[in-house]
Amino acid sequence: MSHALRPTRTPTILIVGASRGLGHAMAAEFVAKGWHVIGTVRAGQSPTLLHALADQRPQSVEVETVDITRPDEIDSLRARLSDRMLDILFVNAGTTNPDPTQTIGEVSTVDFANLMITNALSPMRVVERLSDLVPAAGLIGVMSSGQGSVADNESGQREVYRGSKAALNQLMRSFAARQIDTPRAMLLMAPGWVRTDLGGPDGRLSIDESVPGIVDVLLAKRGRPGLEYLDYRGKTVRW
Ligand SMILES: NC(=O)c1ccc[n+]([C@@H]2O[C@H](COP(=O)([O-])OP(=O)(O)OC[C@H]3O[C@@H](n4cnc5c(N)ncnc54)[C@H](OP(=O)(O)O)[C@@H]3O)[C@@H](O)[C@H]2O)c1
Image (cartoon, rainbow, N blue to C red; front, side, top):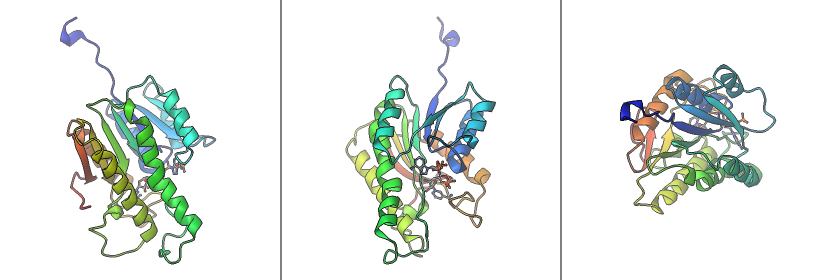
């Protein structure tokens, strides 16, 4: 078969945490660019915006389930996807503590632990468990935040959330450092302050002002080995 006639494979992205907000908008943007999207929601959450997208584009969108704080559910997801190849694995899921204005001296141990588990430990568990589904030319990305930057922290505020994203960044750096010679691309993404349930109504950006940039940065990062910490415009964020 000549090269021109060879069927081309539709690239696939797994977006973990795609029920709403940035994750759902990323799913819609990747579909618009001709990608196949496997998006995850937490079990029992139906119908979500991702389900609506899957109804509109059933050939392009699959809905999977995982709660990233449940290792058994990550294992089940890994088993269900065992014969799939992920051109991009992107862990978007994240949260904040119930009172983000609390200082480290005020936050309860339970709220602190829950936030660290959801924002730092669990995304890395997904990365560790699913990374072998990503080929050498693929990309592993995680949704960080500009607030994860230690160097840029001059205002304090949302300090427990900041700590969780800084921990995520450090853990992702360790993951990357362990495989320094890999051809794989790895990315920590800072999406900007966006008006979502998490970002709140005062965010500087609409979803439409952030997500196309996020997607373009992911696509451009493919084929560029090693870990980078970039914002939605492709600018490097200081560690
Ligand atoms: N918005 C911003 O300004 C901003 C800025 C910097 C970084 N970020 C990061 O961007 C990511 C998305 O935020 P967003 O603004 O789109 O927030 P959002 O609208 O609150 O969406 C959060 C997403 O994460 C999922 N999620 C939370 N905990 C989960 C868990 N244990 N297991 C599986 N999924 C879980 C949610 O699923 P459910 O629907 O099931 O809850 C939802 O899909 C987060 O990592 C956040 O920290 C956001």
